[in-house]
Length: 168
Image (cartoon, rainbow, N blue to C red):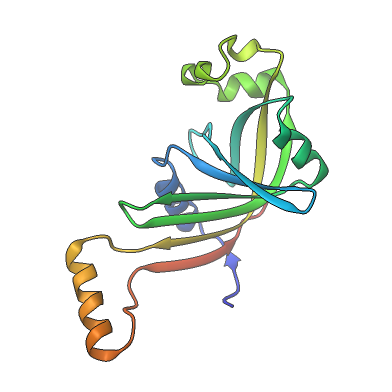
């Protein structure tokens, strides 16, 4: 298994470029030994190693991360063949200033009372490890890969795969 290395500023920017247009991520947490995933929408304007997700204080995922705060966030864009897996630690934040700093009017869909909703919280995920797969997605690349596999018996080595640690 390839070891991770500290993320460079260029890799941090690449991670952001890969995830910023993916509207829904999957958050995986531990529910007493059973891993559970659910769709979440990040509340991000940029990425500095921290992800933010709005949630309800009374939701089951809040009690899960309070019991076991290690989580995984995965992003997939099958059209672009971009895939990102981010592992880190979650913390539930109820500070009104933090909530308002990440609030956007689109969040009103889930929180009709707005950013002052007494049941609103924001989950802060400090990312510690990241891995991405960035594969070319054109039909010609796939055709090339198919031809190589058939003629040589070996799969193509296309795209990038990087593992990195992020200082959180």
